Image 1 (tube, helix red, strand yellow):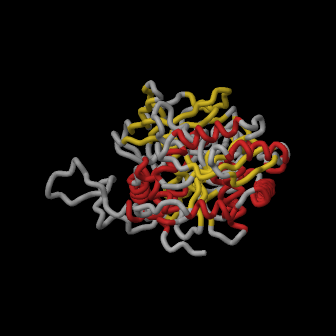
Image 2: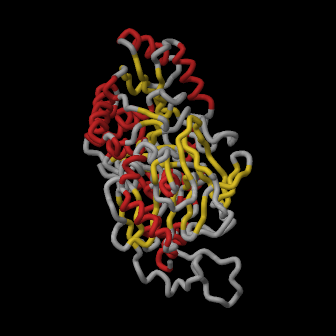
Image 3: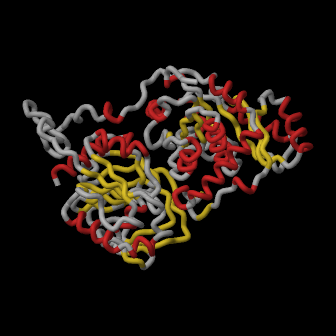
Length: 479
């Protein structure tokens, strides 16, 4: 089956009344089950989550992509979806938390319900039925009727105990008028291990993850009406917007409000665009098990801005890629691999030497920890005069931020939205020159800017401010 227009790609949003209901099992299982039928499946995840998309990619064979109305703005949700869904036969979008849960104090913003409306997509509600029977009808009726703009097209019942339990649930749901598209029993083999920040990423347990995804696919295939779900997906409304494209959004240099009339336009580094960009700088991007958190659009924007993106593994590679002119170190779990990262002294020295030259280095969360003097007593790169350690406290939430100084990523005054998610602390929390002023809701300075380094706990999505990629690549050319 070939879909002629990406705006009409069949799609489903997998939601739930609350976290822990089985969204990831159902969404990942559906992706794998549809892919096993020879369909091209486009995987998506609502919110800032980095880990679930790894399982989605394993299930579908395509890059897992995030749809975050807070980080990117509601206006970019559909274009980013269409970008990811190019050439797909069906798209499956896994929701976040409970269906109507979004950014704290922001109403429906960044909720699964909002994304479903922006995508004009039917919702399949995954219900943990383990401790209820007739009450399931009241719960489903409430979710289906709460917001009339959200179309709840059906239900998948999870953790059903027996045939008798299933019969009671189906009988109750007949009165709710919402069809049942599947019934899943509890299955130990589909469980995936968790730790301090959620599921263990695929990169750390690939062989076991392959088995888990295969088990999810079999459970969904055996327990769900795939034909009925496909028919529901085909009923999604067409989208009128165009697909997001990295090259298009970087097509023109931004206007310079400080440029006097009559002067030639310049890039953010003060270069004439006619003379800039003649070289192709290498941007090294950290990957491997310790640095698994990244948005696919970041590398796409760097490439569109004229860079050659090369991935390396700080656990294994003792040198940066040949010709590295800039370095991006995203999120992940360096605290889990602190001893191994520390043992790779040649790479730590190479990172420090690159930073000393003034080359642009963008580090988020895990990258920030890696640049510190030490992490839990283990020597790190020593780029930043700071120490990092694990804590019991979880720091979690969306953030409004403003750049408080010029850096390789942004000019002072640039506003971006970000997300924090960690159980570590860095002391001090900001350098002599901070990266961001953050409202959490109190205002504080956060992160470090020194030479070409921009290091912060804040995860950002560059599609919301694509000029940061262009600025970073131009700095790679001129540093």
